[in-house]
Length: 148
Image 1 (cartoon, rainbow, N blue to C red):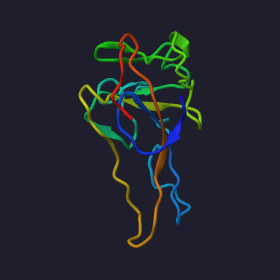
Image 2: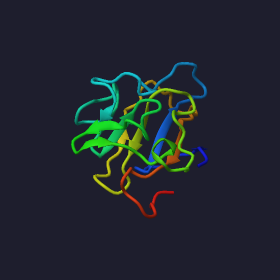
Image 3: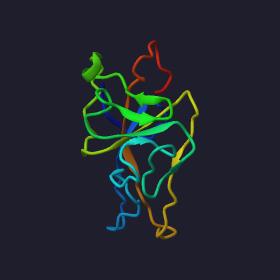
């Protein structure tokens, strides 16, 4: 699996956020690393929340090294993704390219954005917001995925 730097949505899309804002040296994104959580890793909006972020979808925060091993708790039990830790040679990395927590968003079930309002920008200036993403399917599911 190659980790790409693009914008994409899907559960099978795992966001490894890195935010670089050109023109200003101040980081305008709150908690871009998803390190500040209300109750540790888990399902966003159900048993945990990430400071500064909101969601209405079936989206999870995983700690480094847990997506294909111990997983994250949610409303339907513990959720894992296919990866080397549970028998898939799909190349899912243990952590984001910058280390730490990352988000998994479902592209087929209760799809909902992960959002944050960014303030402090100046009209006419250019800003770049980017993140890494990778694809992996929910463990115990099989067959092709539809996310790109």
